[in-house]
Image (cartoon, rainbow, N blue to C red; front, side, top):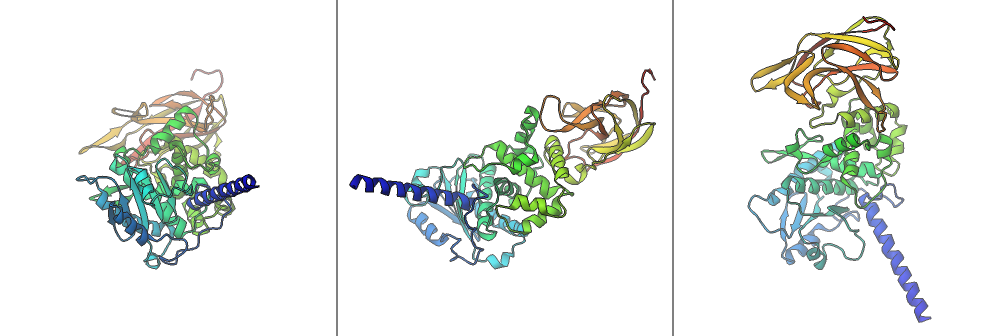
Length: 465
């Protein structure tokens, strides 16, 4: 009987530990879509949704940890002080980010005057466990870089200051949404919005949100754009529906974070979807978020899926959604010679004309356009491009003609280039519209000017003309 009671007690304890673990993961959004009740709205420092930051700060100071604090963050760390390590600046940067998060989520910052988060920046996790600042009872799962529970979070110290700030703000977004928006969303949104709102740059030490970094130096060690590019090259890039179905995990890898970030970046930044996404975020951030998106009047799931594929295929630093937005059209059959102008300051542009797979056609381009500057010199290009600058294996300024198609070797649909340069003949790769653009990085379109005049026409079968 004693043995049986011991076994029952052990089984009960195990079930309780499991339930505590699941509850903690649900609270952090790692098991977004779970059935636990959402955290109550913020009502002050004594709210049951909040931890007592003052008590945790006192514990950290008694333990001899370095503590830095600001209006919105108390940060405890065992990292040895080093000149220029930027640790003292983190609470100030966190406060500036908090204000932008309030703007994004339409939260009245004045109604959150008592809100503060407590963070642990850890070089040695065991030191935090020893003083009770990192629970050792199984309520907090093992994590690789960071974890959030209500308005407290932990992150592993990083050698790179920019990536350390990013991780801090990523967990800060979790703390904000869990306590101020009762977040319990699917994984793609939980992690995607944290990545999106944490991505930033510093200008003279001031926080500036930068959802898509303008260049690699603005997001050192982040690797989101590079991860998406590699997924595209390898044919393993997920579609939007696959991102929406991202499973819960306590240890997401970089591609999973990158895909979630890309989905929220596209939905919040693309002119065809941004307003619908704002409406979505104004409602409950609960387990039905994805279903609720599909129910909104302005949602076009088929277009969003295609826009996401185009975005991930063209993605680069400084991606300009307004100039890269594509007008998807059915097009009219190309039966006669047609003339059009391709703007240098836009991405892929519909010709308005459709070709059948195997159809032969010819084109000729004339004119010159400006494709940026080199110092004080304006760079001009004709349709063959300029050898001074190259982008993705082709001269900048080169005219490209393509059709939207699924690659024969697998992977997501993309623009398949079927002709390029000043003039030539080509064969349609699929049934569909002909799109054209001038070869330029999508983040460098704004300083382009002018365009190229293009004439396209069908080639009659069995003719050499």
